[in-house]
Amino acid sequence: MKATSAVERPSVPTLEVNCATAELAETGFAGQVSPARRVLLIIEGLVLIAALVLPVMLHDYLTVFATRVVILALFALSFDLVWGYAGIMSFGQALFFGSAGYGVALLARDLDITSILLVLPAGALIGLVFALLLGGFLILGKHPASVIFVSLGTLTGAYAADRLARGWYYLGGQNGIPSIPPMTLGSYEFSEGPIFYYLALGLLVIVYLACRFLVRSQFGLALAGLRENEQRIAFFGYKTQHLKASVFAIGGAIAGLAGSLYASHEGFVWPNMVGVVVSTQVVLYVLFGGSGTLIGAVIGTAIVEGLSFWLSDNYRDIWPIILGLLLLLVILFRPLGLISMMLTERERVGSFAAKAQDKKAQHHVAS
Image 1 (cartoon, rainbow, N blue to C red):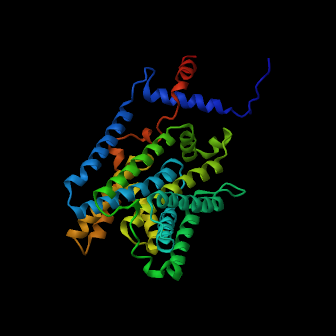
Image 2 (cartoon, rainbow, N blue to C red):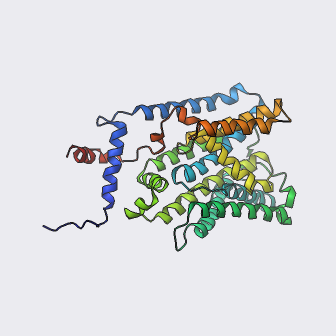
Image 3 (cartoon, rainbow, N blue to C red):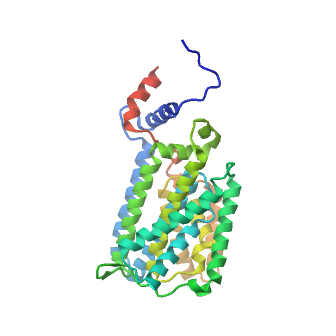
């Protein structure tokens, strides 16, 4: 009988069994949904119902504002996937958001391309390409990149893109690119209003479900491991730098999709869209709502934007100060965001195992 070395690396199936064990801890051997998971489903359902009926209850100008919030929530999802699950602090997420906005603006202005079947895929592709370029430079180096290096690198990238947009006449300089034609589908134009709102909401739901599936998969388990203990994940045999670059690129594609929607909805793009201000803004959305849950990013965006709208209308001179104090209080007393009032920290890791592994895990636990 062959002896096993004490320093032999554990096989990847060991991680899968541990993964299945975590699944059983949450769902139970009978396959019942855990209380934490049930609460999450209720929160997601209530948010979806509220979003579906919102245009019926709002005036037209508020529907336009709500559409902007939904698009920014899509943008926040991209950052939560990168930071909340993989632990990559990106201060340059607006680079992918704004570059896609500029890209679709140039397509409409110079090539007269406004079809939604081309504009939205082009925006996602632009965000993906820029994320691959920046992520490849910062993450896929000879030595593993530290959190500080990636943070400062993405921050530098956003700042450089902002200065480039302001100084490049072809991109409109300080004024940006105004009067972007609306997206079209055949002869129909997607102008501001309920139709555009439900288009943005439909895309948000699709991307949200795709992200939920991703973070519940084996890939999602590896991402959570990166956030909690990167060295241990590397010990299991995973190529951590490739995992980081992959999720960074996926986040860039989602941000690019949001940027193309935002540019088409607002009708213009400007240098701030690629800069540090918007990059910091999305960090606040996720911090306020709660990172690592996806729904926290959506809730945080809605609350921060709603408070900004209401405070700026009622306290025009001091509203930024009031909003800043509220954000500080939430971060001070709820470091995990408002969602932590309803969900435990365990849900930030979640369960990732496939159902097919349940019997294998039962046997492992019993033995």
